Amino acid sequence: MNTEDFRPEKEVKIFYPPQRVLMGPGPSDTHPRVLNAMARPTLGHLDPVFTEMMEEIKSLMRYAFQTKNRMTFPVSGPGSVGMEMCFVNMIVPGDKVIVCRNGVFGGRMIENVERHGGIAVVVEDKWGEPVDPQKVEDALKKNPDAKIVAFVHAETSTGASSDAKTLCELARKHDCLTIVDTVTSLGGSPIKVDEWEIDAIYSGSQKCLSCPPGLSPVSFSERVTDLVKNRKEKVHSWFMDISLLLNYWGSSTRTYHHTAPTNALYALHESLLMLAEEGLEHSWARHRRNYEALKAGFATLGMNYVVQEEYRLPQLNSVFVPEGVDEKEVRRRLLDDYNLEIGAGLGDFAGKVWRFGLMGTSSRVENVLFCLNVLESVLSDMGMKVERGAAASAAHQSYAANPMF
Ligand SMILES: Cc1ncc(COP(=O)(O)O)c(C=O)c1O
Image (cartoon, rainbow, N blue to C red; front, side, top):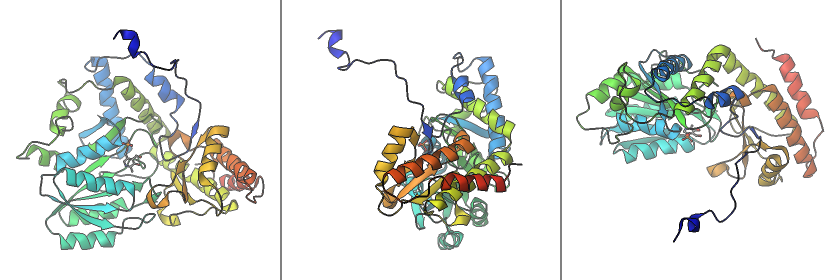
């Protein structure tokens, strides 16, 4: 065999992705400033200029998470790696963990507990509902030997938000540490790590931070660092052992752990800087304002939300597909004809629900109006009775009634 035998069968050219508008469950659009930052010259991961920027990322992350935790840094891997890092470091085989499941990602947490040798005590809530604090308290009372409470703050599969402050209070009252998934909430909804005394928190770069996928911001309390320091048996992952990672991210005399994705980290630096420039409260209010406008438009199309109003995530809008509409065909037309990506329902919601993301830079007035207009056109073309222009008009009225501060 010669080298030519291994050439690709089809001719391969430069890959130019189409310019989509990403309004699904994530990734969201990357801001041009962030894309630009990624294209800057690659530096070595121990270059002093780069390590100075790493310190800035850590302090910008502390602002985003509202924490003074020393151990706050981005993991080189998507949100799932941040998730796994929390469980693998904090669980000693045989530990009992109370895990709340009200959608797909709570299920992933159960998998993590079991794969790392823990015993999962599952608190179930219906898809579309928040985690019920009463059920968590009952489980804590029934399992006084539980070590950890784990839950998803913003369940992307349904669009439901859970009361992280109350759940953390309950966990602490029963002497448990907490693991909180904020992949879809960081930057889009309030998170106060120190005030709520969250012990381990992870997120993702690709949702409300307007950054490409592939990095997972995490933060750990001193209680977690002490726990890991005092573990008798080694953490069951070399790559994710936080005490080893600290030699790179945590100390001034940095030593090689793995080759950090330098250009991806420039992107995160830029996106966190943009969040700090905008201000957290402004960003949370922007996400809410755009949600209000989208909601007003959906109402004119007779589209109902899955989640009760008070538990809705402004950045993830799950709505029932109108009766008699071919939901897959709508998504296909939106993507093929208008370059607009929206999300399908998962699990029990497959075929019944659409998920509209308004995350990060995708959460903006133009996107809301564009989405409502093209959705209205597609539904009308497909035979649904709609009043043309009503959705955008309702959104306009909502914007006028809710001026940005
Ligand atoms: C709530 C939640 N947790 C975890 C993840 C996993 O993140 P990733 O896909 O970046 O691994 C996601 C991804 O969408 C998510 O929405």
